Length: 238
Image (cartoon, rainbow, N blue to C red; front, side, top):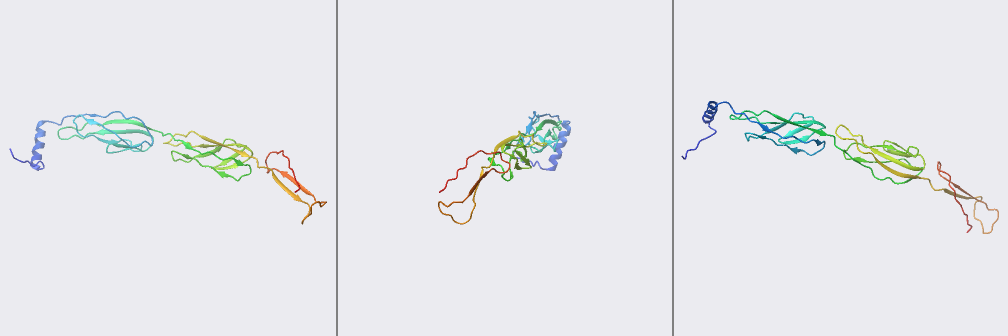
């Protein structure tokens, strides 16, 4: 009573080890490690847990580091594929190492969506213009024309071909980690230019009211490529 023992003393440690040897071989232990659910690529890191029948702490490692990694008990997804996590317990002088236990799950392709804003109507003859869209994956979005007689697209530059409805489609085909996005369409009207009115008189200089022999010509024409226009032009002397 009242005595203090230094457990770090090497003699005591040796005595402890000899006592364990006399007591017989280390006893066996087992690990309980539950099944892991499939997860999509891009999911946040998550924790895993397991227990040993001895109550000793269980460690984890990844058997498939190209697909997933482990730090402590936190699993981080790296790519699509099969992730296998191994639980281990190394034992101690009293307990033998537990048989490792593996659990596998699938890292599946992540869905993605496209954001493609509305497009404004344009007059036929307008200069080519660019369109833009984004995918939640951060992958590059491609464009195609669903109405090539009216408009065409090269990369993201749209060229108007004729009057009508132009429909642009935005697509993202996906990759190893992301599934293809649902295409998104945006339509706009390519309108005919209004008639261009030109008025000219046949003489130069000033003229007086009632002066004879003054000739005016009036012409109405549409922009090149536009359909025919029917209209009435009225010229009033003031």
